[in-house]
Image 1 (spheres, rainbow, N blue to C red):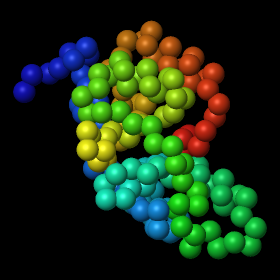
Image 2 (image 1 turned 90 degrees about the horizontal axis):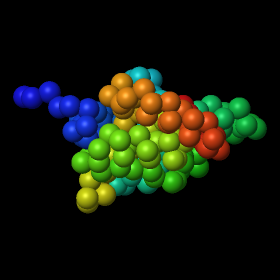
Image 3 (image 1 turned 60 degrees about the vertical axis):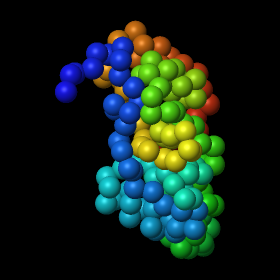
Length: 153
């Protein structure tokens, strides 16, 4: 197989395929076990393969810190997940993926096909090593200007 050049790489070339997922009805404990077992910081929340949101380790940590006599581990993921799905298509260029990272101020994006089915996840670190230093610097600058959301886990 030919080694693609930087300019021809797409989201499909750098994504982590088939990430572990959970449903809105999964417990926070189930999600925490996925974080541990898959050594990841985010779990896409799906229904029939379609992403509804994400749950990050940070979401759980913040919920735990704010819990008052509430058995957090048994609560459903839906209560804590980020419901705004920010995604890219498998064929999107790395340059357009980097632009979306910067514009959204996120560290991870879901990769969703034309049928709205989750195909993978891309972390900023998956993209950064394939881009010119100037593009990486621009992302950092844009991300610093964005309000801090929950996708920092």
